[in-house]
Structure formats: structure tokens, C-alpha cells
Image (spheres, rainbow, N blue to C red):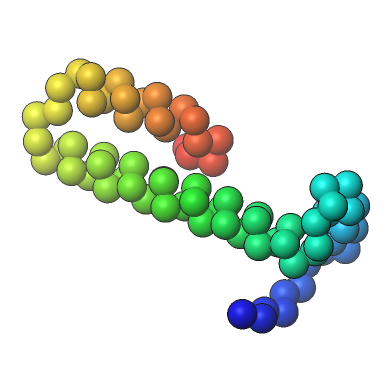
Length: 78
């Protein structure tokens, strides 16, 4: 699939440099970045769904501790 995107020059230059250092094409670099971001979004949504469901049941402490641990691993989670 082919997409065209516009990004800030500073980011584009950094991507070019990093892709070259990693011996990746620009396309592969962006594909990997998108894949990583999608994975984080899916994970966050799954956690949100668990939170929603946990609010409707009497969850045990172990479940709440596990969810807290997962949340701490997500730097973008408030």
C-alpha cells in the first residue's frame, strides 16, 4: 500500500539519519514505527476495556495490581 504524508523537516531529517544508521529504507522505518504505535494503541484499548469491565465486577486485588503494572509500562498513559 502506498501513502503520502507530510512531516516536519526536523523529524524527517532525524528519521533519515536514524534509518541510515539502522540500515533501513525510509519506508521500512516508517512501517516499523507505525506498527509499533498501532501495537501500543491496541494494548491501551485492551487495558481500557479491562478497566471498563473491572468496574462492573468485584475484581480481586491481584487483577488490580496486574492492571496497575501494565499501566506503568505505557509511557503515554495518563
